[in-house]
Length: 278
Image 1 (cartoon, one colour):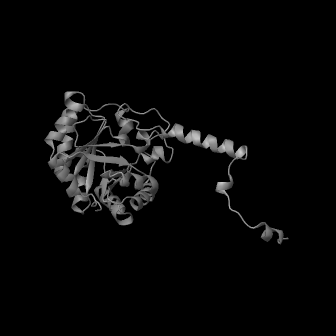
Image 2 (cartoon, rainbow, N blue to C red; image 1 turned 30 degrees about the horizontal axis):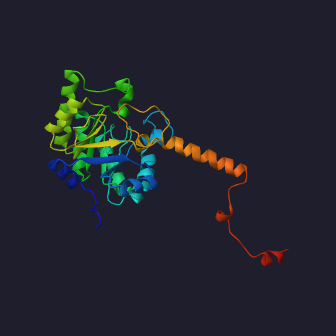
Image 3 (cartoon, rainbow, N blue to C red; image 1 turned 30 degrees about the vertical axis):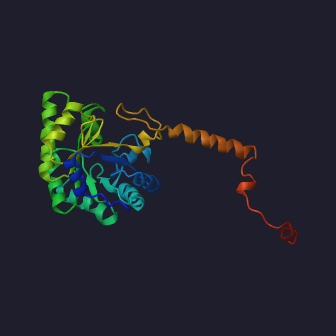
């Protein structure tokens, strides 16, 4: 029997029942299909595609058109998994009207089921209007990569009393604004645990310890595909960068020594037919 499409109601039910939520990023059809077939609950088309797909040093340059192009591809590969699309930098900060319009583009121009925004109380008004328009929203607190120049560095957030209280207040503000889940990135384990206990909506951790309602990783990190120094919170389940590089070198070697293609990779024809060709 086929699995049902994951919905916001399903995520809320998982929170209530204490069933962990699984989320991974994907940015194209092929990987999205594999992620979906593995039974992952949610696929995030993150603005991290700026780094892993487009080669930028930060997430800031990625555009709405870039995002929509990749979200469309992911939606074609996702059967049961919920697809969440990241609103990129300056697509929702300028005005509430623009935030609603851009969030709506994801649902109108792709088959995404939800959007994600970074920030707390300062974007709660935009979140409320997006939700009022019928668009499910995931929040994102802690380390927010779109604010890297303001934060100053990629580091753990909420370690002192003031910062911890702000994060809890922001989480409550997002919940009141109508989000159905909140990503917590680079947050101390005990603070993430407290936020998870305070909120009625699901928390999804990335570098936020084991007590969140779910976990998310960038798929290129956990597969060892992206040639960078991984953050502490990343577990590499395989090391595909090295495996793929070895395969490519073997291909080059076999082509150069003419051992590929072999007879098993080639097509035959009658020599009698060939003899009649001039």
